[in-house]
Length: 300
Image (tube, rainbow, N blue to C red):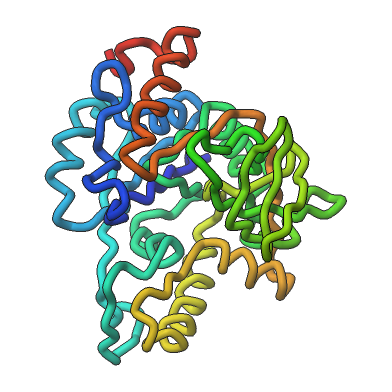
């Protein structure tokens, strides 16, 4: 049986962060967040990692990751670009930025032939999530049964203000019904609320949310390509419109073409959006090293 592949979304422009946060150092020896994700993925049983990047980043990525990963896990690099002719779209469409995370997945369609998962480069997910995803991809995944890791919302919030979260509505079988984007979620007086139209609504601590950790089989590439072509033509006059992974899930669930099992994890999530997040992320990783979750020198 082929081991699953880890697909890392690392082509973002990091405009709010101000530099390439994908390769910024956060660990005690300059480890990136990606390092910890790959370390956990190897321990969990993934067999290959594919970086989705901008082509001009490839030398930087190879110089950083190849010395660490050589002999530990197979690696590959694919490039997200603006070429629409590869999808049979001849019309020139002006873009200010790449088409989004679901479009990024298509960049890997020629190199990924086994079940795979998709994660963000700048998010820390934890070993439990990778192990549960491997088990799903090995034992349950099919061309009509995909998955998403569901984090407890209370373990994804920021100390620095309100956040946006994709709240998962789950049916009695544990499958995704829909993802509802809550754009202003925050803790208050020991509870969690989201705000809508100036009114507060409570959320339970363990409400499952999506942090962009998805599991698929290669069958999703053809589905995604068709959806992308429709999206591109419908949004050709909207240069900031983005084709996100939840749009794939929403389409497949609504048409009953596939189910998405919401796999729960109790791991704490953290990520970096702004420069101000860096000290918090560094401290969080330092605590994980101190409690023995990771060795101080990750790749020694």
